[in-house]
Image (cartoon, rainbow, N blue to C red; front, side, top):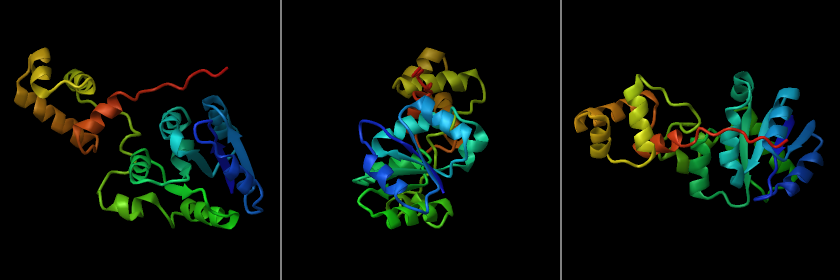
Length: 211
């Protein structure tokens, strides 16, 4: 198993890196400390599992948009954290992560969890908390699909917090048309509500240049 650890200063994963490197079942452990290193590592050699801290969820979602699609689709992504809170579980699920790994595990338990996750035998989708919510996995990782410019404009205004009647006034549309359009955008993009739409609209980030 080849593992990439995206390490960061907000929630360092140094202890996990040590555990992984001391496990004979792990073939290779690569460590990336910024976006450029992570992208280079993913494109230069096979990676089975990438591990990020709970503090690195947003960064890792951004990263997904800057790696080759065939690499992104084949990659198993795991969040490692000391405290797997309910908000973290839900956020990781919506950001397309496959599982959450609790850090107070020994080397064999860590490897076992990663292996089960890699083989699809353990998944965040099946966690009782997440399963009860009936959410769409990875809903907040995709790009928004628009039918026309009006959809795009409406989404931009939803993203800055305007209510329906102000969007209608700004775009010279009826309130009912705005509501119908928003409902259509949510349905086409498999989103649950306009909060998710606003969040997606405001997260078209770019990897910063660390050079």
